[in-house]
Length: 60
Image 1 (cartoon, rainbow, N blue to C red):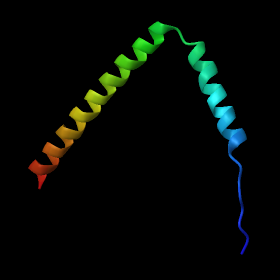
Image 2: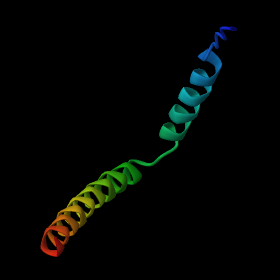
Image 3: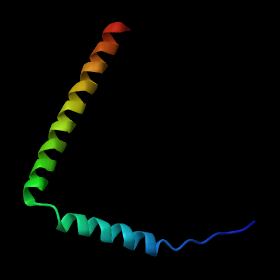
Image 4: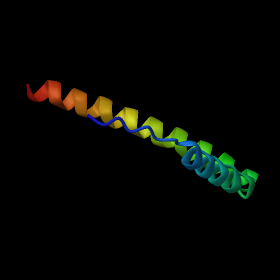
């Protein structure tokens, strides 16, 4: 049985660097648009879930 030990420092550093680079280059209006779209998406997702749950109850 072989035990593999992986050092994820390089991958973590690459991902973190990429995230910070992208975050630094995004305009503040894009952040607001992203927050609004995420909120709308969450509300729509919840509403569709409730609707499907109601339909499922009516069918059974």
